[in-house]
Structure formats: structure tokens, C-alpha cells
Image (cartoon, rainbow, N blue to C red; front, top):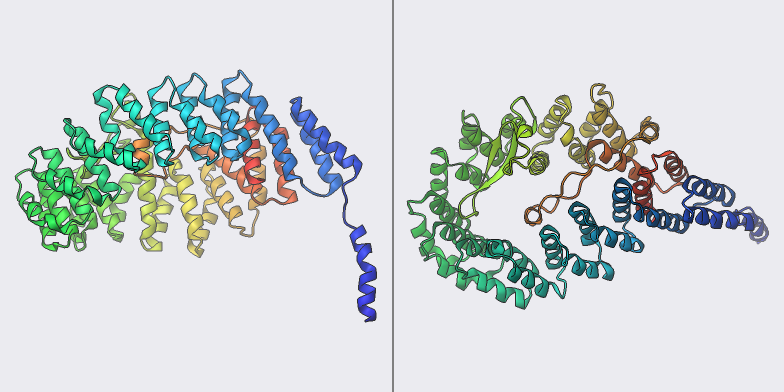
Length: 561
């Protein structure tokens, strides 16, 4: 009883020891906000740090307010670089308070700025964001309107149907094949009715796109219509319809599919054989293998889903034909066969041929193969060469390699480091971090000693810091950030078209190389949310290039929301 009394007597004394906000500290906080409003950024940050020193705590609400004031000022700038940085900062912050800045980007006369603003608006679930999608539908640029239509369909916007149908009627017929995917994605009663009309459109390309999107969305309510398409004579439509029937697992169509599997047209035969295989008719795998042996690249790629095709794929991977090699490699990787490593280096590692890769569809677009384009950087003006898409494909195959035994994946990872494939480094680092095995951590530690590639070395330090490994990793990251104050922060890769993102949702707006590293480093430190980290980032903001502050403040707002 006496001990309990002593404890109660001591309790008020312990409370007195806690730091309490003083009138002086509150004045400093208010002054910091006032100075930020006057755009005296360094002085405002200094006052805020004085406040935290006196009060003994961080005030995340005040940081959010300071960030909003800084971004509001940047949105009024006539400097295109500052406006871009502000737009990125506002978008990455995730704050509902900065949607007005994204609206300013949407109303900018530059279609690229509109696209970036729309990308961030599309990620928001705020009511205001839904209103801004309607604003985007009145843009002077078709690319902005189509992007906005995609987001409206994906979000099931209540006004999406009217806007999408209105856009369809205003455009020339050549644009009609772009719309079945939007109606299929929207999926409402009215959208379904529109999609039914498009399945029977006079243009075969519209019909094919409609059939493919019905299959991708799993719409088995369209099966009666699709069965009828199996009797039509157009090659592309037959191929697409066979694919859809197989994807939707319609066993009642087996007789018609077997007839198509005897077609003299290879793409129709292959599509029907694959549909039958998916419906449980395993004997049709031999037809796919036979077409692959004869050098059909679509059949080679399709073998990735057929068990027992590994040895055939391995033999094709050693062909003199580059197209057969890369398609066999992709299929063997899908089979999770370690022998795929022998061909994977040709896809992942850039050499004197300067290859770019792109998907190449069949006439009915239900079959796929890969093609390699040499001297890619000398052909950047060629509309058939898309370097962003090529990098996305190489990223995809690097991710697929994680399904191989760990020793094989680490062999691939070491090769990427040794050959200094810097464009693959951000993806590879993320994969190694997720792996978190002793082997992956050891490779990251080896990477910190890579003198020939500062990008690899710095990314490995960042990964080990995020993994909270013991070592000088935090000091290295802090030192590197402090020395980037004069670098341009945001250099963005082009955003891939929404049609591609329907199939590959991980294709996003991505900063390039060193700017991405700076962003990830800044965010990693901010995510610690401790006194030391926030103080360091405030110092970095004070010393940063003035244009970089807008983007960095957005990152800090995201980490302290």
C-alpha cells in the first residue's frame, strides 16, 4: 500500500517532465506558416525546425499545411519546370487539398501536362476527382479525352456511358475499334447493350475487338452471340471467336472448334487447337507442338501453357532464328524451366545490336509472339519502335525470373549488375528486397561495392537501408541525397497508352534512373517518421535546388499524412 502511494505521489512529477507547448513555440509555428505563405521557404523551414526543437515533437498537420502553401505557390508559376515539379508534388502527396493544382494541370494547353495531371486524378477517389474527369472529357486533345474515358470506365463513373458514347459518335469510324474495351470495362446495362451492337458491327476490326474484350472480361452472357461467330468466314473473326469460346470454357462448342482445328489457315487452326486444349482436349497439344516445330512464332509462344513442351522449347531456343529464340525463351520461362536462363540474357542484356522488343499479335489478335527490332535507338522516330514498351517487357521477364529456383534468379540478378543494365536496376532492387533471403541480401551487399556503376551502388545502399540491415547504409543514403541538391528531380518516362495498361496494370508513370533513385531515397527516409529522419529531410528541403522543393515537399506530405 505504501509503495502504491509513493507511485501516485511521483506521477504528477513525471507529467511535469513532459515537454508542453509554450506560447513561444506556438508563435514559431504560426510564423513558419506565415513565411511559407509569403514564399520565404528557407526561413519558413528554419522557423518550423526551431518550433520542433522547442516543443520536442513534430507537427505533421503543420507540415501538411506548409506543403499545401508551397505547392499553391508553385501552381501559379510561369516557369514550366516549376509547374511540372509542383504537379508531380501535388499528385504524389495524395492530399485531397491539392486537387485544385491537378485541375490547373488539366487546363494547361500542353497535352503532356494534361496527361500527367490526369494520371494522378485517375488515382484519386475524391468526389472532386470524379468531377475533373468530366472536365478532361472537354479537352482539345483526343489523347486526353480517351485517357479520361478509360478512367471513367474503370471507376464505373455514373456519367461514363454518356461521355464515352458521345465521344464515339463524334469521331470518324476509324476510331471505333478503341471503344469495345471501354464498354466491356464499364460493364453497365447500357454499356452491355452497346457492346452487343459492336459485336455485330459492319467493320470486322470492331467485331474482333468486341469479341476479345468479352473474353478478357469473362462475359459468358455473350456466349450465344459468340457461338454464331464461329460460322463466319473472316479469318480474324474466326480466330478471335475460337479464343473467346476457349477462354469462357464453352464445351457445347466443341464440334465447331474441332472443325476449325482442321483449318488450312494456321492462325485459325492454332487458336482453335488452343481453345480445345483449354477445354480439356489434351490431344490437341500435339497440333500446337507441330506448328511450333514448323517455325510458327505464335505456336512457340503458346507452348508456355502446355506441360511437357519444355524439351521442344529448349531445342527451339537454340535456333539460328532470333524470333524463334526469344519466343521459346519466353515460353520456357513461363514453364518455370531453369534452362530459360540461356536465352534470357539475350532479352535482358543490351549489346551491340541494340535490340528493342515488342509484342506482335496475329491477324485476329488472340495470338501473340515477340519480335526483336535491331538498332532501336537509331529508329526512335519509327512509330513501330516503342522504347518504353520494350523496357516494360524486359521488366516483365525479369519479374518472371523470380519464379525460377532462387539460385537461378540470383544468377540473372548478378548478370544485370555485371553488365550494368541500369534501366532494369530499379525493378531488380525491388525484387531482391521482396525476396529478403540471405542470398539476396548478400548480393545487395556485393552491389554496394560496385565502383563502376554509381547507380547500382546507390540503389543497393538504399535497399539495405530499407531492409534495416546493420551497416553504413543510412549514412550513405543521407550523404547521397545531400549531394543531389542541384540535380533535376523529375525526368519521366512516357506513360504507356491506356490500351496497353488494360492488360498490364503495373505500367505506370515512372521517373527515370537517378531521379527515381532520389525520389525513392527521400521517401524511404520520410517513411521512418522519426525525429531524426524528418529533421534530415527538412534540411534537405532547405538546401535543395529551388525547383526540386515542390516535388520533395509532395513526397514529405505523402509520408506524413
